[in-house]
Amino acid sequence: MKDKKLKGYLQQSLGEEVQPKRLEETIKLCTEIVREQEVTRAEPRTGFFHYLSDVFRFEGIPIFGLQAVTLFIVCLTIASIADVPKNIPIFMPLFVLAIIPAIFKSQYYGMSEIEAVTRASGAQITLAKLVLAGAANLVCITILLCMEVYLQNSYKEIGQMVLYCLVPYLVCMVALLRLIRLQKKQSLRICAIVMLGSCICWGMSARILPWLYETSAVGVWIVTFLIFAMFFINEIHYIAEMRKEGKMYGIVA
Image (tube, rainbow, N blue to C red; front, top):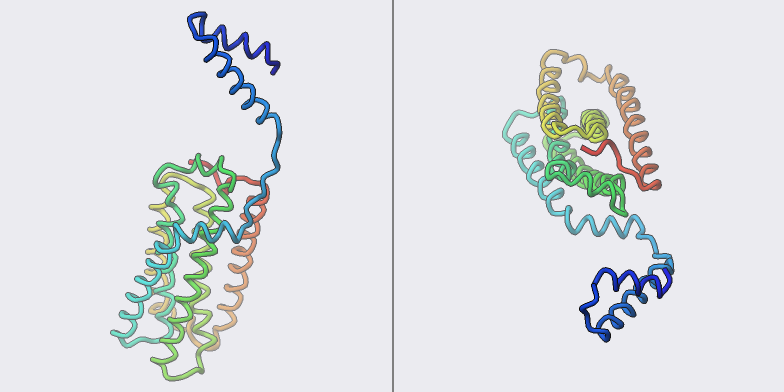
């Protein structure tokens, strides 16, 4: 914008009853601002791991705190009952349930639209939260397995116990990611119902389908693990692609 044109515009806007000295100062200041805006400065883009550390500062305590509380309740329950490995899947959806408040926070507070237009993009925010949640889940699952081995006083069924942990976890995570992508207003409530319903379903399967937890059925668990691991990896890859393009993951609700 030319100085004369800017001066005329300001004079027209401010009117005639202004101090000439103040008017000249204002015109000079506005001219400098306009000229600075004409120069495009290439700002360094924030790396993902640096951004992850920033998200950890705000979301780390809620995520790891809820996981620790869930782990304590699960371990206390396991220690107080005559536990057997087939009961492990009953508790796995609870660890996914514990990350729901952090994952759906923006939707709950009506901030999805703001996340969609931020420089970090909604996909990067979601991916960062999933990385933190995955790390917390991995720690909890490891501790739970160690406790199971201690209670069973045997390493013979460690392979089966790992599958009993991972298969229900992956099933619930795939369901969670699907609900995040849909981004409906009732997704948070539906997700909580799905996780609690999963606990009931796995509990019923341990009673109604005892053959599913025998050594001969390990092949079924491996196939199920591979299928849902493929779905999970594919969804994480999709989120990463959305992050690169600076897009929102899912629909803005």
